[in-house]
Amino acid sequence: TGVQTCALPIFEQRGMRKLTSSQSPVSVLTGHIGNVSRAIFDRTDATKAYTAGWDHTVRSWDLSVASETAMKVPSPLSSPLPHSPSLQASDKVILDLTQMASQNLLATGSTDRTVCFWDLRADASQQNISLVLAGHTGPVSSVAAHPTSSLLLASGSYDSTVRIWDARSPKQALFVMPLPAKEGETEAGGEKVLAVDWDGERLVAGGEGARVVVWKVRDRKSTRLNSSHQY
Image 1 (cartoon, one colour):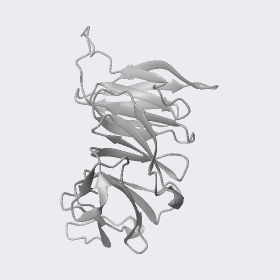
Image 2: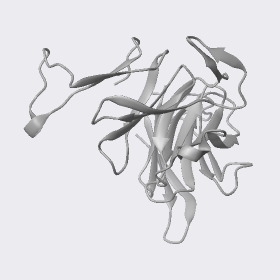
Image 3: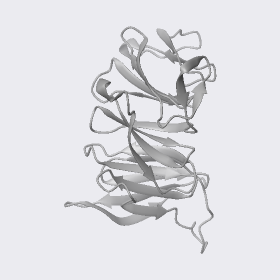
């Protein structure tokens, strides 16, 4: 859970007990200096978590000791971060975060309309962002990694499109899928995409239009755009 006080409370449920209004978190993680927009667990290690926020940073946490283990900032750098004169930030207000199938790689969507890959390896401290994907014409509100491929990623944007990317071909998206027009309408209404997810065979998106759109995007041999449905 991200909160405006820039602290991240962690709750514990033993035996799936129901949380009460008086339940206290087992720890509170502090370090961000802006709103926390996304928090996720590591795919394989339940003691690790990652967060991203409006302070332009991606942070790694060790939940077993409730401490920050690493902080990544964008580069090239342009202006100092408040309270941290040795660090700098760009205009990358981060809106969403996902972990790729490769454990050392995170991907983010930002207000600067890009998707960025962040290298978590310790020796990558001089170049935190390993790849930038540009093509959206609005802020990237949501990103979803393919569940098994370390190269494939989906992104949703305020530009009313969902895009599928292959890291091997970063110059342009594999597919650009505009939200279809609503039933009974001939033109799409330019709705902002606010959320996407991908199970490897179906890609789902929701947004301002009070509906959910589902695409079938994978056949037996490769990633392909086959059809879409809306609900």
